[in-house]
Length: 274
Image (cartoon, rainbow, N blue to C red):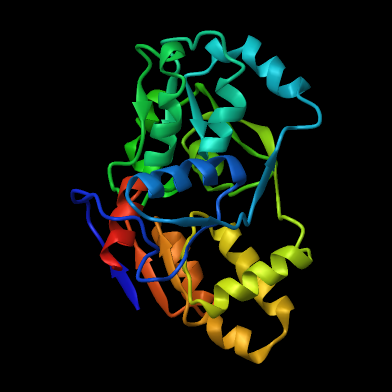
C-alpha cells in the first residue's frame, strides 16, 4: 500500500512512540541525531539505527584544489546534504556568480547553516516536493545558458550518473568531485539484536535513501529466520521520494508512506500514524 501525504501544520502532542511503535531513524549518525531532536520537539520518540556511515575522504587533495577554481564554474550541484557539509565547510566565501543546485528540501536546509558564506547566491532546487531527484532538478535548469560552461557535481565516491550525462548531452562541461566516503555499517552482534527487536515491534522506518533501504533488506536476509522475514513485510516504511518508494515495493515491503521532500513533511506523515 502506497500512501501520500501533503504539507500541513504539525501540532504539538505528548511525547510517545507512534501508535506505541518505535520510529526508527536510519540516517548517518550526525543527521540522525538532528532528526531525532526534531522528533522530540514534535512529541515523538526516535530510535537511532544508522544504515549508512559517512566519513571524511582519506585524501582531500582534489577537493581542496577545486576550491581554487570555484569561481570558474557557472554552477555547483550538490547531490546530498553530506556533499554540502563536506565541501562548503572549506569555502571562505562563495562567488556570487556561481549558482548552487540541490536535489530537494534537505539540501536547502543544509545550506542554511552556511548562510553567511552564501549571501546573494542563487539556489536552484526542484519545485515538485514529491519527486526531488536529478530528473526533476534538470527540469529547473537553464540548459541553454549552461551550454559550453563548466558545472561541478559534488557527491560521494560513487553515485548515479544521470545528471552528469544529461548535462553533457546539452554541451555542458561537467566535472564530478567526491567529497566524502559513504559505506555500509558493520552488521555486528549488537546491530543484529537491535534489528530483531525492532522487527518484532513492527517499527515505523524513516528511510531517506534507496541505498539504506537495500542495506536493511540485506541485513534482514542475513538473520535467516522465517519469522523475521515475514515481519519485514509488516514494517511501515516512510520515505520522502518516489524513487525510494519504488525500491521499497521492489524489495517486498507492503506498507509504504510517500511524503514530500523535507523533514517537515516526514513529521506530518508520522503524526498521521497516531
